Image (cartoon, rainbow over all chains, first blue to last red; front, top):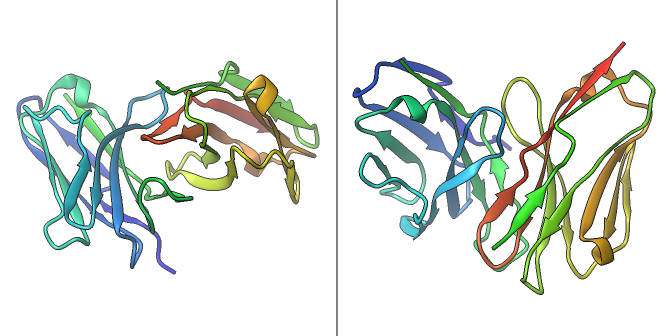
Length: 116
Length: 112
């Protein structure tokens, strides 16, 4: 079974530029998550989708971050404009069930973003 | 609010030593799930184990074992006879009725 796919693996941009990350979850997984992991810390949830609907985006900085999952499968996360503090690893995860069940999230390899 | 504390920032051992990674959690939820993930240098978080709050039975999987003690809100992870390939950052995580909350991780360095 293929795991969670993410691209690109690395991205270097200058501040105020825009950037987009792509994620393809494990086949059949209805729930998709985007996390931000700053160096030396654990991942922090940015947004959770159930199929193509948003379940939780309370920690997403909506003035610059946006995410979509139009067909309920793959997803994109965008940052516009980027700030220096956005330098982090962006992890995508998926699970077969949503909140309230014994779900386990499976993670992709992440995209390492460096904002100069 | 949920909280996960991994007090050990970094641990260094020599191959074949046993090592225990500590995890203490806080939650007001009566039902919750605890997880351990491994993050090797490649960056991907690898799922190791999930434990339900109502199941305090300890678990062993090969060289890995987990000790869940509800009385002390701890979910410790022991690697027996450590190997160089065990070198990674290990995260403990908690999910109650809300989102998955991670600790800050413990970096384990196993030297030959």
